[in-house]
Amino acid sequence: MSDSPGDCARRRPAVTEVEVEALVRGICFKTGPPRTLGVELEWLVHELRDPRLPASPERLEAAYAALRTLPLSSALTVEPGGQLELSSAPATSLTEVIGSVSLDLAAVRAVLREADLALSGIGHDPWNPPLRYLHEPRYDAMEQCLDRYGPEGRAMMCSTASVQVCLDAGYEEPGPLGYGRRWWLAHQLGAVLLAAFAHSPVAGGRATGWRSTRQSMWAGMDPGRTSAPPLNGDPRAAWARHVLDAPVMCVRADEGPWGVPEGMSFRDWTRAQDPPGRGDLDYHLTTLFPPVRPRGHLELRMIDAQPGEDGWIVPLAVTAALFEDPGAAEIAYRTVKPLAERAGSLPAPCNPLWIAAARSGLADPELHEAAVVCFEAAAGALPRLGASTEVCAAVAAFIDRYVARGRCPADDLLDLFHGKDIRT
Image (cartoon, rainbow, N blue to C red; front, side):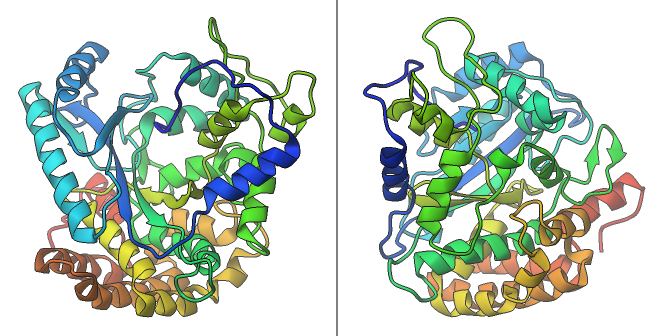
């Protein structure tokens, strides 16, 4: 959500429906050899002495003002509920991403400790109801729009956090690293990543019945905004149609509240008497939240925030290995191909495969079997990508603790919640 957007005023001249389709095709899948990698880390912020206690808006404001003075290589932004996000610059290697973001996180944590605040890597706040920290026209309009579909929108805005991995779209040509294959793989392998890294089983102090409550929130929201387009056919054409047919969240204004139309698609808007401009299109793209979002590169959005100071490194490393190494990518493709039948014709995240991943994690036998193969392939590929011994060891430890046992980090939280010992 922090990829928002610039000036409020709409841009002229207006764009036509045909121009929108051409623009979307051109800007959302930029192909070439996969060379860069990035990560976006969202964190819940709470009182240092007790993670169940949220920080007051006044304390957050003071702490964030101090954080903005830091010379970070990552972009630092604040989410509607006060969550903190660090977005790395595009890097040429896994090692470079991990190194730069780790330094930034160390600096951020030091400033927060001085303010008696801390970060938590968890997909959904286990204790507190959604409470908005940012009161801006964009988020006022977003809340009004999403409230039409139920309470999930507010929870998504204010109570959730994730690890988002950003990958180059891939080659124009077919093959393991071709953009068509990578687009398809992201949506099928995405369910395996969701299951393996699920880490949000508690909300409001109660177990929800989902390993990833965060993902259940996305599945319960407006499907025109949060669902993937059909995967059959050309990805560029499918995404362009999806953008045009998606509902308009808001119409920006220079002064006063933003308009929140009901039942108007972007295609409808281009046919109206007061059609949108290019700035409106750019903004509209930031209001779509599918599990895989093409933004020139591919943004994988299905992974919950992870436990521990360095827990985010494992999903980044595993995802990078399964997409950037041709051998691992081919193994992943063959492994998840049978899962497509289970997904059926419904788009992610509302199809049976994704629902099972969010609800059961790796307790689901098919997802567990696929995860074992994919994670072992990733572990084998990491040395070829130049990963350090520490990163390889972290992935191996995750496999031993979770994947091999058919568990995910959410299971540890549930055990703690029910008073079980999780040390072994």
